[in-house]
Structures are given as C-alpha cells and as structure tokens.
Image (tube, rainbow, N blue to C red; front, side, top):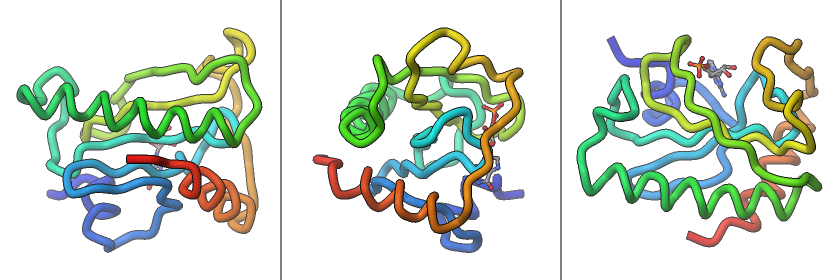
Length: 132
Ligand code: 5GP
C-alpha cells in the first residue's frame, strides 16, 4: 500500500508544499515542533533512508540543503536542526527544524498547532525563497 507521503506526491491528499522537483518534495510537517518544520522526501518510496541508492542519496541531501537555506531565511533561528526518525511513516523523510536550543528539536515535546492559513502563508514564504 502506498505510504501517506506517496499519496501527497500523487496529489491524493493535500500538503503545504515548499519545494519540488522531479525526484524530491518538501512540505510542512502537519504536527510541527516549530514554525517552518519541513519534511523532505524522495518521491520514489523507500522506507529506510540509508536504503536510498547512490547517487540519488547525495542528490537528496543536496535538495534538503537548498530547502534548509530557504527555511532559515524565513524563520529566525540559530540553525536548522536535522533529524531522521522514520518510526511513524515508512517513507524516508528528513526533518528540517528551525532551532534556537536543544529543546526545540525534542520530539517528545507537545507539537504546535497552527491554523491552515498560517501553514499556507509559511509554506508560501519558504517556497518563494527556495532556489533549486
Ligand atoms: P517520523 O516517521 O519521523 O517519526 O514522523 C513522521 C512525521 O510525519 C511526523 O512529524 C508527523 O507529524 C508527520 N506526518 C505524518 N502524517 C503526515 C501528513 O499526512 N502530512 C504531513 N504534512 N505530515 C505528516
């Protein structure tokens, strides 16, 4: 069965997209730890990130790097924290999270709630800054 992220790739369910090319997609996490918390996925469904074949693996991180720059331009923060967990959704994804301290990337914290309009506005601001 297709992963929830493949359904986003195929347009079957919506997402607040921030960047896309033929191989990769970035969109806002629906349960964010911070404003601008972004997930970056390969469009081809692979469960475990380290099973992604070369050279796609390197291209994937290059794409994530470009997205991280745009997130950092839009969301004031010390750094973009990077995490790979993958325990919930079996489709490789890199979390890009604006952080100012270690607690900002603590996945055991309660997630933030934003109205759809705010997700939409944040995604549009980040998308406008992405240079692929
Ligand atoms: P992980 O697999 O890394 O433990 O967590 C999966 C992440 O995907 C979580 O942060 C969760 O909020 C996010 N997520 C799960 N389902 C959806 C969805 O349908 N849309 C979006 N945008 N994010 C999702």
